[in-house]
Image 1: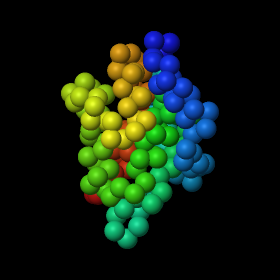
Image 2: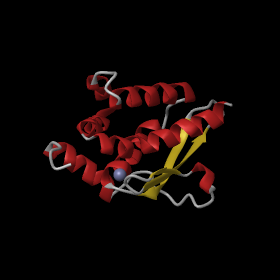
Image 3: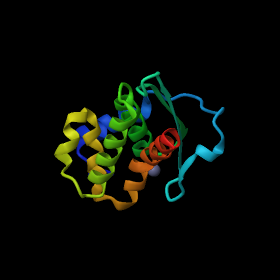
Image 4: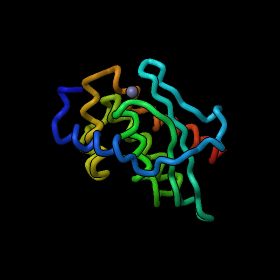
Length: 145
Ligand code: ZN
């Protein structure tokens, strides 16, 4: 963590201290709770869609480390306005970058999201960074099945 670029760390801490789109999602059951036991992170994700399958609201709930919280915060910010197909592409791109299969430059279009690329050097932290994205994956699967 302390090897992360200062600017990256600043953005991550900002999202950790003031997470965007964080809400109480107690009404969602624990079956949608995603956990990362190696760090103690947990996250739930909720999406609201309009009649054309466009995401009008993306909220998360949970607790965890700075990386997992910042990742959920940054992800929900970007999801709003996407349709389901765009969200699926976005999800796959992010996971590919985190796995090192895609160039990190591909995340540049998504603004601050690229700060999470810094955690690729820390394999234990990748699970923190991708936790919210796995919650997104499940949610999108439920919406399209
Ligand atoms: Zn964590």
